[in-house]
Image 1 (cartoon, rainbow, N blue to C red):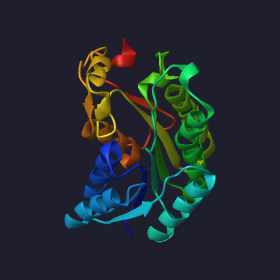
Image 2: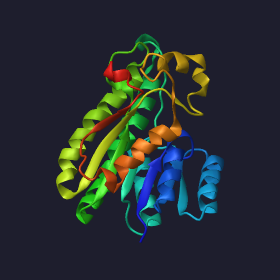
Image 3: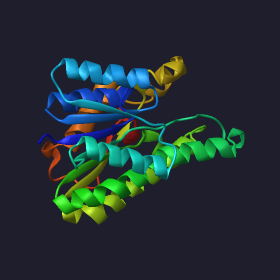
Length: 244
């Protein structure tokens, strides 16, 4: 039976790159996204290469939707999900005093609540089988104060701590939980930033934005047995920004 991976936000950008790379390794990928057309295109491309892929349409806005996605993915995976990639997220920028309660709730619902309840649903099942891998997507701005990043940065700081907590809770049962912390990355979602992305990237030693493939390589590494002795780590893939 093929290994099954659930990838949230898997129909574009980093998530889609991860789905493609895992599928190339023979993993059955289950991608989650809001846009049905984009989702169908993603799995069609993967299947065209002779790989296994399925799509679940969901906006992943609360605990209920997270549980529904987890259960559907488990069904598609013939009773199990072996890898969970918590990739879906939103990143509004702006001063704290310009953020309203609706924006706050939306960011924390998708960036924190959904991963929390996906893990709550899937990690115990992985633990029962004695093996599993969870990779959470963080961000470099969870590690330092950056103007305009109050919601995004703080939500991912929560993910950084949850990564350690989940490693402590489920690691002894064979479930590895780690995080990848990207820097500025060129994707469909960040195209709207224009030159702002280049300016942000210029602050790091690498001096340029990452590609989605570069971030995906780190995620796939942590999701597979190549990282068999890595638990509770946060891998910075930020061009060196948080190292200087």
